Length: 416
Image (cartoon, rainbow, N blue to C red):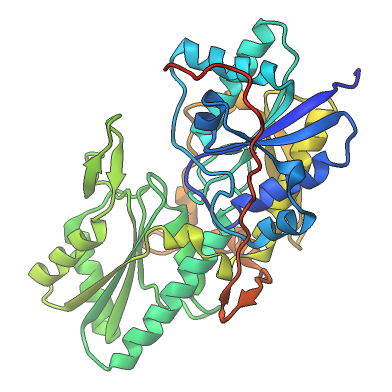
């Protein structure tokens, strides 16, 4: 295939993670190795920055800054949850690409973000504008299909399991009997994060906390929940419960939802408090609730080195694939078949991602529905291995910030 010369653009969207920026570093580092990629730009706040022509020059950043992205959490370019819907939005995006000779577009994000990228690529193809679009997976929820796991998941699980382990030690230290600690974690409609808390258990110690794990894939029963709590408290002086925010009842209704956004999407939260009310009213035990919130995706000080390295690798792989002629694809992480964990990259078509969600396999839960078996441990344990070296300054982590040198605009402001 003939070499395609032009500029590349990087965008980020959706909830950030501890290793999101490692993928940016991988893209920039690899792009600078290819003469066909003339300039390396970033879009501020994802597609919002594209529509507003808010681009920055990433090649102008120091190599030290780019390296620093590998241990910096968040989204260095800024993120958004905007989903392009109107035809004029896609037309505007392509107009911006043409104005800046963008021939390579790399988008780091979840399923909705990849859908945006796919539609931009489709429009470019229809207009005969040669544009290569490759997505990089990103979600701590680990619910993207086609990839074995998502960058960001391993680090979030490492933080959750560590926090559960520490809360359990704290509960044990109080000496109080009949104490229930409820830990609410993210994950939306899947239980990957809640399940990850089980890694806090020591090998061959099945009675270690967390004692109970509730995931959205298993319909929640208040009666069974009370029985589960009472069963644990007969055996232990305290009980640690982990619950996924998207827990549903037998009719498929969310057990607890705080609000809905302007688009009508559920804003999760409050399931921990709901369970607390159940325990206080029906068991009579003392209860405390820990809602980990966005700390789950921001805790780069406890990031998994495996996760960070794979996020960087995914960024590199995206550039290599695009330069080799691939487009309308997303990079995937492919686990090796050997006894020792290995991971390579692959590709899947963006079209296959639309509307598909990867659920936690039911067979990875035991018959009780509140504990995980060896299949999950075998899957998740390799993903939390190793620690990222984060520099400290005056006793606190030192994170990188981009200079964000703006690229000159050449189009009139966008009227949405």
